[in-house]
Amino acid sequence: MKKLLWTILTAVTLLVITACGTGNDENQGAEENPDNETNEVVEENNETSHAGDDEEAETDEQVTEDDRAVIKEEATYTGMQDPHSIEVKTESDVLALQILDPGVADVDFEAIEPDTPVTIEYYQNEEGQNILTNIEF
Image 1 (tube, rainbow, N blue to C red):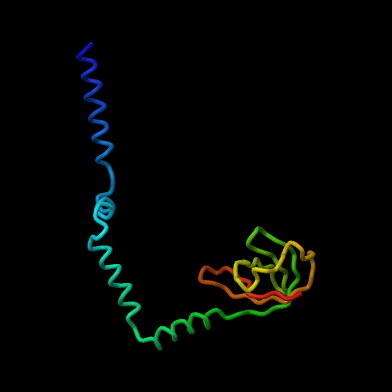
Image 2: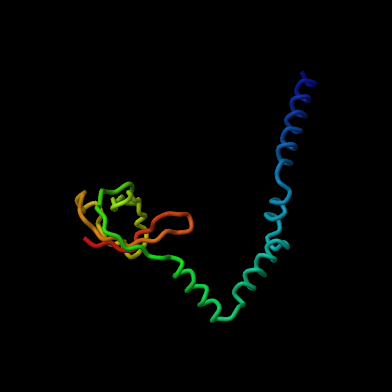
């Protein structure tokens, strides 16, 4: 009986030791030492990207805003798709528009009747989603 007990205890101990030893060594190093070289490199890169001239930073922001070419179209409101998007019909297409932009945060889309003519303004983000920026009834 003692031999069986020692065998089981040894097997359980080996199992626990083996289970504790599995893992990604790279992640363990990052967790154990938060000031490792990888974190320092990231911080240096962030400092470098912000160390540029103020005019250059403003130009980058303007380019980003200009890349968001706002499209203005006449459409027909068809309804809500989900809590953060609506659907409209244009002359050529049916569009899903994300309504997360602060410019349309106060609009009660559930109160708008289906088939209501609207004028929409939107842009496409980097992921190809249509983001509604303004709607007029």
